[in-house]
Length: 405
Image (cartoon, rainbow, N blue to C red; front, side, top):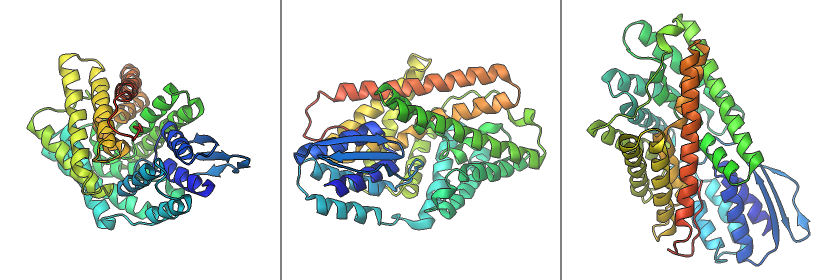
């Protein structure tokens, strides 16, 4: 039992699941097997005590969003569902965890590259759907996709990749701007660098803070800030290499998701890119797409009819409710798997990136405004997660408890 819990806990932490959910899962499993346990979970640390047997602190892998292919996460949850009913022995469970983690990406390096290009183009269609933006997003997405392939299974490159990616993408984009091939501001960089923008990290950290996990929540927020500055460093280096004045590319950027059929199609392309890039199971894709559209239209509805940060709150609320209900139904697509892609639609991290860039460009008023916007957006999304979980919790749709982000 001890080895099964440690292997499973480390895998869930590496997937980027919140410590609140990981601790709840492990405690449910020990309860199913009538084992007395004390469990402490941190973003990179796991401590388990079963009876008188206590583990030394176990260091889990540092994770980026999607560091585990999502088909592996789905299969881990299939194992969790069985373990929560004591339908599998701990020895078999341990073996199954290792088998799941040994699986390769479903589509290989080519799938990662093609998927990330579509991922970037889809986001580009949501932010600034011009032909120049889409070509730039696709080209820059190919650069980042190749970097992700080269950095795969190399954990030491985890904090170097954002800097290198930001440097190469900024050189590519700023050269195009300088030559007059691309018209735009620093916002043109966002689709290609979106994978590294720590919006999900910020939101998960706020969720953990609200759940009482102060150390875990604050460490995620600090980590997210560090990643933003690393990205900014790479962008500024690229700007200096190309010799482009900051005032030409750093400007106040109104952050409004576009509307109409282009945005609808952009969500579809984004979902297909996620399917290949994050190695999603075939049977999970329709439900992920459903949650994406629910989050997107919820955000649009809130922004249009109420305004302010209600769009982020409503999108997060509906995303959480729909993802959790799907996870609790016989469909069994885990809520983490169905909800995670929607964070890139709600995009809180990119606003923070723009705010820091404005600050470096000495546009202090815009920087303060944008920084306030990102803080309030993260709070709104986190509040949507909490309220959504509270709404769904009393509903008795099955024996499986919801595991929120």
